[in-house]
Image (cartoon, rainbow, N blue to C red; front, side, top):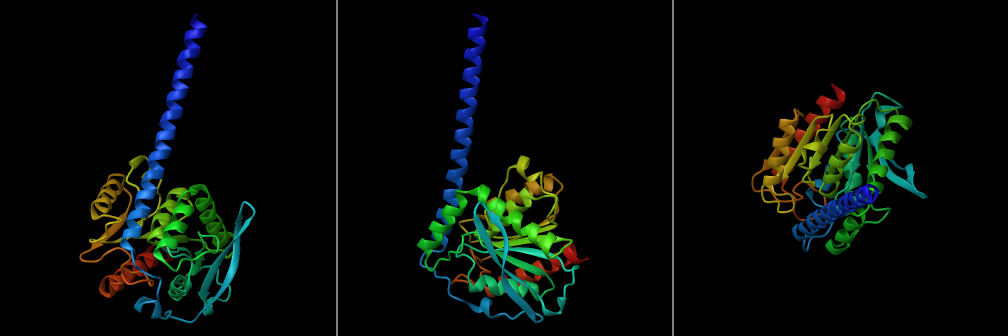
Length: 293
């Protein structure tokens, strides 16, 4: 009789745990889909056309090439690697994992990798879409959903990128930066590799506000957001900052008044030059401080 009761209780607890786990997974998936849908609304009618930001030249001559930086399963990971021409095998240059916005690893993101390399970094623009890029908002939404549905693959991708910069390119310090879709993944990279990344930059990306998750962070965080961004609302940004402050994690989060989602992207019609220039200055100063000095 006791054995039966114990079995019944154990079975009930197990079932409850399974249900709670399923509910948690369902809630997480629902949240991811909600963010994706809100981003789609922000980009409605938009296209990845090169804008003013895409015409910036690197501060110094750089060289760039496609590289294979790892594998996930049976798939090779191909990225766009850029470094200053003057590097000549200089292993003291910090590394940067560069994560594209929801359009994918297109020409505009490759330009951003070269621009970052011009600031004195080994910049590796990763590919989270398996070689695909989007030309319409609908296509971008589908690619983003597919990537968000396989978090483990995305994390493995970014870990391979960090290992490539550290082991193949000999970067002693490594940071991560991303925009939009990539901004959210910049935070996920920081959460997944707290002991291996030294700085993280988030441009209007999906945030985590749970203290139990954020307490893993072990690097300074810089964030650039827009007050008119409905995909990443200002109240979420403030909550994110409050939790980071409570955990003693250094952060500098700025909400640009009047700027919307994707205000700094070199792709599309949402570019706001004044906010974008200020955010770039904040970004380069931040990276200089924590990856070079």
